[in-house]
Length: 468
Ligand SMILES: Cc1cc2nc3c(=O)[nH]c(=O)nc-3n(C[C@H](O)[C@H](O)[C@H](O)COP(=O)(O)OP(=O)(O)OC[C@H]3O[C@@H](n4cnc5c(N)ncnc54)[C@H](O)[C@@H]3O)c2cc1C
Image (cartoon, rainbow, N blue to C red; front, top):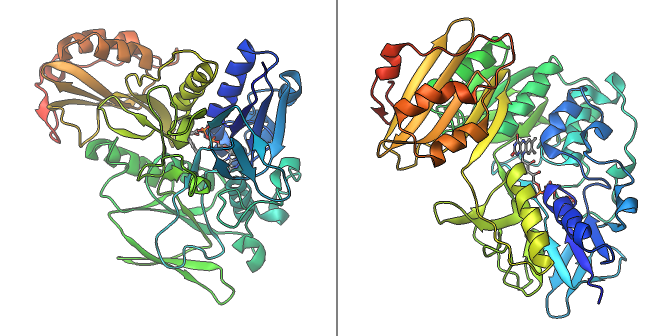
């Protein structure tokens, strides 16, 4: 008997789920519903499109005939509800509801909106969705400066006002002059990327962060001081420990300044990068359980509270290694969850087990690798820290607990996270990890190797916050 699988979302989680099911079931009808775009694209690469280093096609991992080759039915529409009794997915506009035998919800994240007065002024936006990219590109470059061909997949008539995929006017077009300066609010990865693309376009940027240092969950004060220094060298006006109070507008409804507790910052546009929330507002009113963070609650098999309904990727509230239940908003975990959801929808006894945390990025031009537990609020005992200031500048922070290595936070050099995960899972001591650190080196060939002097190597791990 053929089973109709309906997937909401053609991001990494939805696409992996679709491909996983098709690999095993050549004849099952698979329908992929997407409000944002016709084609799967790599959201992590949005900044390369903005900076003109890749065109939009360049961030699509598959050829555009994938839907035809895999016999996926594509529906460009906004899903607005699920009737789990009758197994129907409701869509906006005049489109008929879709009847499903298995429903996989992979609807990703929406930007967290600014809580301040004036947050909906023209010229205030985000950098999360394809429509945000379009707004941000036009705001920065303006049609007159750098016209890009219109994207066939960029318009959807049935999108609703509360959708993160809504097209917005730009303040730049309304003012009829190019953007000169912008403010970015929020010190996470997306905020740093927004700053980078603005600097790449030669614009003045003020970077406002409420905390005393960047991204306090992941980066400590010493690491942050270096990143701030480097950003200032790149011409960014970095404001740490400054609280936004309001966005101020002109008579036409365009943003003209950001008001903080330290004064007013004149600006032509604002990128609010204060995090993301699961994009699950459309499920309100259904009997699918949603947690207090907005994530679709799933068990270890990624099954929701409703029969035959699964969730994967940014929108799913999954169990973490510490036993807590919350969404994980990461590319590689979304990919893995899409694969598990596919297996479970096929009837396998598959489980999603979160492995050791890792991530890597580039913070402006500083390489960044993080593995394991390095957060400031973890209950780990101590940090060992070394700063290299030679031909290469780098920092090495190794977190230990009960004498064993539990995390690495590494800036300035490239590292292979797989090797570092092996060190953590193998229960290495700090001394053993330092002896074998070179095995994880992933620097390019002309970069001199990291040499840690004996004095630094033998320094004891210091309690949280102190240097080794
Ligand atoms: C600028 C940026 C940089 C990033 N960098 C990194 C990084 O370096 N490393 C990392 O691990 N992660 C990074 N991330 C996060 C990563 O991109 C996400 O975790 C990942 O893309 C989530 O994938 P997903 O499939 O769950 O959802 P998404 O990619 O968000 O896809 C959601 C899909 O759901 C569809 N959809 C949603 N609601 C509806 C609806 N109501 N009706 C119909 N369709 C709907 C959309 O059309 C879309 O196709 C970054 C994110 C951004 C924005």
